[in-house]
Length: 152
Image 1 (cartoon, rainbow, N blue to C red):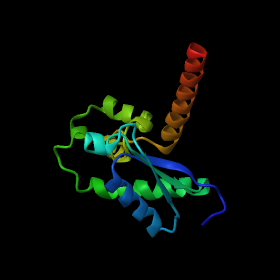
Image 2 (cartoon, helix red, strand yellow; image 1 turned 90 degrees about the vertical axis):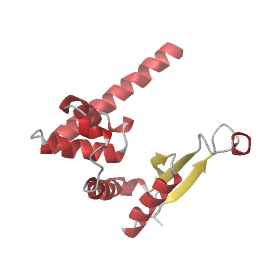
Image 3 (spheres, one colour; image 1 turned 30 degrees about the vertical axis):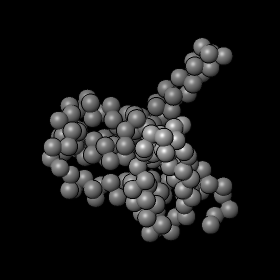
């Protein structure tokens, strides 16, 4: 394992999806640490595991490589998507919103939104993706500042 401390790379509510992603990363030599954070309600009381979160942790030096691996993985899934999948009915503006706010959408939806826009002749360039990323970071930072100011 790397000497870097592991940090959360992704969070999941679905253990099966987390396992698939861990397998993808292990297959390319990225060490992982999976930490399950129990939900607020006891599963013996409510009968299921609502609210638990699975943290997939990796060395920060592997974040970029892991993102590229997952992008390729999700691109391969797109080829077999059900034509009734809800994103196929989204407008270009709605798809751009997914591209602008990837933290609010899953990786599969983000990859599919990019593909659909490209198929419609509205390809999003890497410089646009970088610009969207910087704008989103700024937006989230200002949101945190505002909340801190508002709630003290």
